Image 1 (cartoon, rainbow, N blue to C red):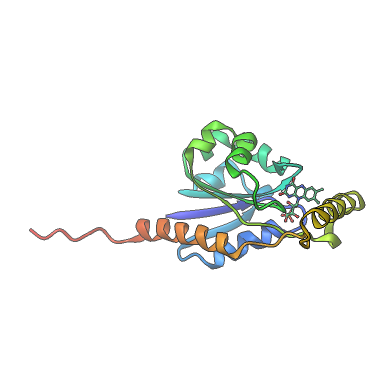
Image 2 (cartoon, helix red, strand yellow):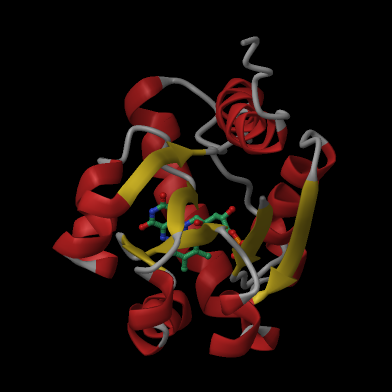
Length: 178
Ligand SMILES: Cc1cc2nc3c(=O)[nH]c(=O)nc-3n(C[C@H](O)[C@H](O)[C@H](O)COP(=O)(O)O)c2cc1C
């Protein structure tokens, strides 16, 4: 069983999440940034994990384009998805359906929201302004800090599932006594 984690990112959070996930997995697992992945590479793997950050209520556009472009070869594989974003309560099914479509939604074996982070130093002026304004209004309404955090529990949940997949596939065939 060969597993490939493909990620897209703008400020680096999803990249870190993808690498942290790999560290928790036992087996033949590769992490690759979306831009370096093509059909021929996808062909080499049995299980693909696709990770994307959420921007303006949708999976990052370049990951949506990637999935569309490699649709045929991706749909031959086993698939799981994770999202990274400020709104941990976002409807993940809706994100997947809207971003990648019904066929991918039906094929997905897991959809996990990993929480998120704001890396202000990596944002442009406009992005910084938008997220600071949203965070401030959240803080006013809820009294909480309004800053997102990564969710270790979700990471564990996805890692546990993927380790089961890797273990199942790697387990030697049962010896049948005659
Ligand atoms: C302009 C902007 C818009 C965003 N919109 C959303 C959003 O609609 N929903 C959400 O959950 N997070 C949103 N976020 C938060 C990002 O998803 C979060 O910072 C994430 O960790 C970024 O991941 P990346 O570094 O891999 O790009 C937004 C962030 C920025 C800067």
